[in-house]
Amino acid sequence: MSRIRLLVGLGISLVLLYFTFRGLDWAAVGQALRGANYFYIALASLVILAAFAVRAMRWSWLLRPVRYLPWRGLFSVVLIGFFGNYVLPAKTGELVRAYVLGKRESLSKSAILGSIAVEKTMDTLILFGILLATLWTVRLPEDISNFEKLAAVFLAVVLGGMLVLAARGRHVSNLIIRVLQFVFPWWKERVARITHSFVDGLSVLYHGSSIAMVLVFSLVIWLMTTLNFWLIGQALGLQIPLYGYVIIVAVTNMASFVPSAPGRFGTLEALSVLVLALFGVDKNTAVLFPILLRVAQLVPILLGYIFLNREGVKILDVQKATKETTTASAAP
Image (tube, rainbow, N blue to C red; front, side, top):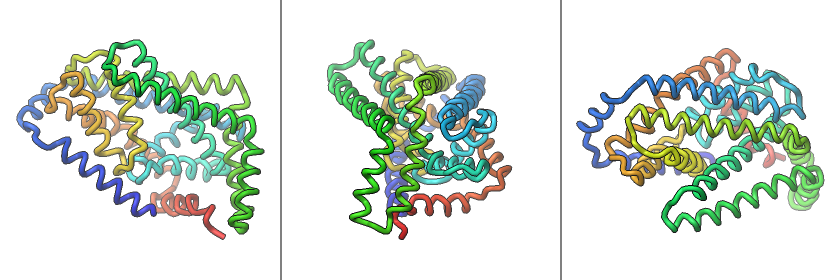
């Protein structure tokens, strides 16, 4: 199944890249590239690194119910996960994070994955919240109003589910185990261990101060991401309003749910060009936006690779552990 998912992702990426680069005036692209201000690219790279530091701080708070770990030690692991997303399919960089930290600190990888699940849920909630606030305060086409309603329903469902799981996590996991023992009785012990550890990672939601800090960190992360996109726009001399960058951030990051090649190649390019076209940006210039964004990401990618080697971990080891993690519940 993973091989099929990889092939589907590669196919989608290739199709999107083809339509993104089709019909470009390469002379105009080269002229726009030469006219770019690379000082802003350097600033964007620094902002990206600072955002990863904030992500490490947030992760430290999320892991407190399991064990207190200083954010400085987590910073390298966060960068390793980012590197993993660029070289492994299906955003398995998150599993790389869990593998490296679990190996280093002798922690349950399922509990770590639980903290990452909360992290991703918070990212989704804050991202949707920022997008909704933007859509409510900016005059946009009336068709957007339907999207606002759907997004509000989605937010309510996700938030409600998280609150229920936080309040009744053990009861929910016990119910799941009782159901599974009738269908696949040989799974019971393994599922019980994984499910309980996963719920333990969600226990941060029991602590009001912790969840408040996580929400604050999440908001800061997305504001820094928007600043990063704005810097890329300044490098190209784009004349679009600030809320345009909010929309680009939201749309391109929500596209992470779409299967694609590692590094979101194809989806980032196609959606960036599409959104920028709504603001009147010429395609020959817009196509450079995701390219320069990836240039700014080269430093954290390289650091992630260096930190991974320092951990003494090989990508093949991570891939093997990833397969074991994803198939654990299916094993007798």
